[in-house]
Length: 354
Image 1: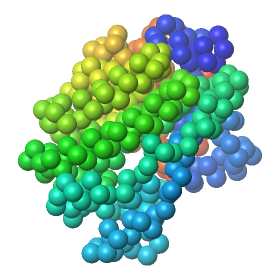
Image 2 (image 1 turned 60 degrees about the vertical axis):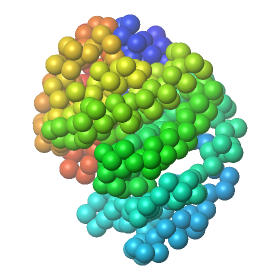
Image 3 (image 1 turned 45 degrees about the vertical axis):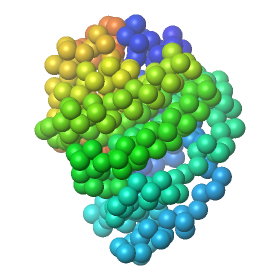
């Protein structure tokens, strides 16, 4: 099989010849890789199977239009503002996490949401996407459209989690208007990716915590499930073969049936600290595939190279000959992960015998 054939067959549970390798490194570990391996591009060096296609390019992006939303609660000096107008203040305790500030936190009316300057994706430039897809596929790689934080997270980033939960619980029209608008923007982006020919569309919203789901099934099914299903239904009309990944951190087992009904094909990351992969696979492995399962709170930072390899092999054995598991670390690898454990993960994938 070619790389593309192997990857697609693995995720469609039709068997595989090789186990693909995939992980993301924090800035510190990127520098470790440069020092240890003498390479600038670890993705290329380790032969990861996919490459990102660039998102739609906004034509009028100007963060200054969002400054007025922070007049009552000013941003810290040096804070950044993202495409949605969300403020990000730098954290002294993390190289990649920020203190998030919410431009709609003080809103009190639907009219304030409707007048907010959302990114104009309807007029954005997507002319580059099809060409990027073509070049990626010519290299025998998978073209990936990555747009995690699809509905829930984008909405609460703007409104604040507390305020949005209150709006939803009160059945306030503000929640409906905001979630509909975010869904509309995400649908534009998703359709552009799929029309350009991506193999994988990566959606997601964190709806789980370490030991429980973030909201009740009733809240999820009322406010989020129908909007996710709308996006997936629309892109599957364009290309029924596109593989939809969905990311959520934490414990999400009660919501997996709803995610399946919404149309996802692959669930990421199945944190071993929150859910048991063998149990999850037994319940749902005939309906969806999985990506992740190698704990970044446990075995990757604290295990031995032997334990890393054994965990990889055990999880691949659970999925069996037909596949259905794109085995990988569950999150970004942080500075405490030994370089030897990264190499052990790679070696385990490359030496696995079904």
